[in-house]
Amino acid sequence: MLGFRAEAETTGITCDSHELEDARWFTREDIGRFEEQGLRLPRTDSISRWLIEEWLKEEPA
Image 1 (cartoon, rainbow, N blue to C red):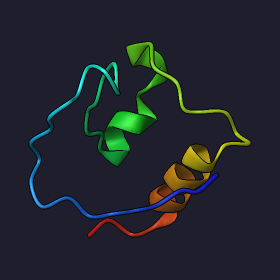
Image 2: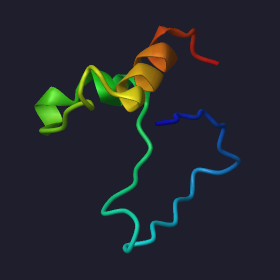
Image 3: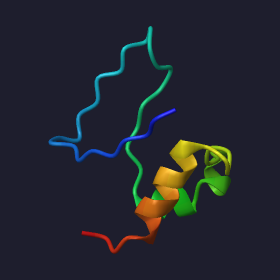
Image 4: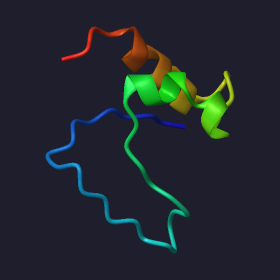
């Protein structure tokens, strides 16, 4: 499995319903409130979780 990071040029999202059920942007603060929003992070052994945790460790731009 591969995982990649990229930087978006816009905040607009086009979600192909045949590929994804949902797509949204989240801030660091949003992720800190996931539990109260009824959301959860990916499994701790997933690449997606590792990418998120590495991003959270960085200083905000």
